[in-house]
Length: 102
Image (cartoon, rainbow, N blue to C red; front, side, top):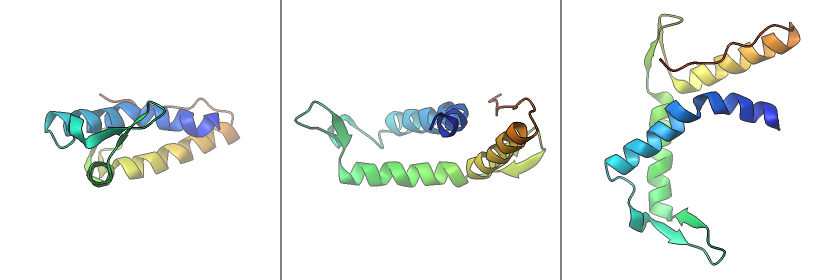
C-alpha cells in the first residue's frame, strides 16, 4: 500500500493543499459547511463535498505548461506519466525522478 501513497505524495501540495487553500480563501468552503460527528470527527456536508469534488476535477483537468516536456498537460496526465516513470524505474532498477513544483 505504501507505493501508491508514495506516488500521491509528490502531488499533495500542488493539487490538494493548493485546492483547499483556494477554496477557503475564496470562501467556497466555510466553517458552517462542516458538521461534527459523535466520535469528534469533522466532515463536509453533502453540498460542500460536491463543491469540493467539482473543484478537484477542474484542477485535475486544467491545462498548464510542463516545463520539463515543454507541452501543455494536466495533473491527471502528469499522474499517469509518473506512474509509468515509477514502473520503468522499478523494472529497470533505475533512480525514480519525482515531479517537482517550481
